[in-house]
Image (cartoon, rainbow, N blue to C red; front, side, top):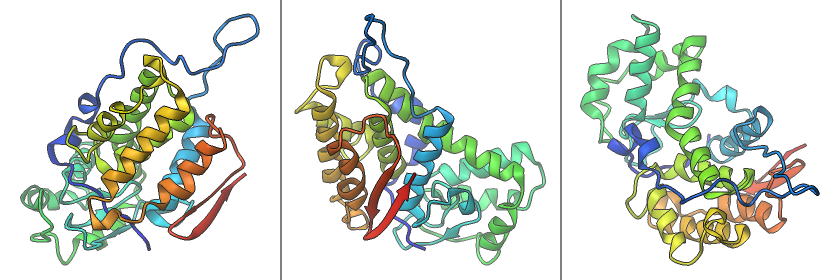
Length: 277
């Protein structure tokens, strides 16, 4: 199973929603106007159909599969210095979000099969160590994946830490569904902080050359600038040196002017071809 690495996200993950930088005044100025001058109804990434597309797109890059719901039980150490990577969004034992997930699972289902690993997860947080996790953690993770409570916890932590902050920032910046997805994929990989290779730093780098629609900028120019900054951030680490999830996926949609992320969609990631619709 192909799985991309991600940048260290320690305390950043715990406060991702406040770490994202405000996009300035106004709401989505990029949305088209109807003939009578009334703002057209926005269909954002958090609508059910678009959110499903977003999950499939990320899964194609993170798991080489469109079947994101098959990834609840995924777990392995991919050798990127972040310990174990698992679940539908790649929660990592070394980057705090896996710890928060298991803590949430323990709140919802006390005595579950993963709760006994909480002391070890707290100890290894911030490192690639497996101390206290081997040999049983991966098997117990896979067993827990069959529990709807654990699945729900994964869904909710994905939304709390990654999806909702990204979509909210996209709406604030006035970008449409594609732009909101571009933000989401970036925060999944890089985390929501403000250092140069986290989401806030990527956005700040883009701001040095362009402005989002909510600040009077052109939407296409802004998203190209953001993707340029994203590619720069990816190339700062060998694990992310393959930028195809930008070059042959997101940039393809942007060049086609598909700001609504409308199907059919065809793209490539790491040389593999995918299609929705």
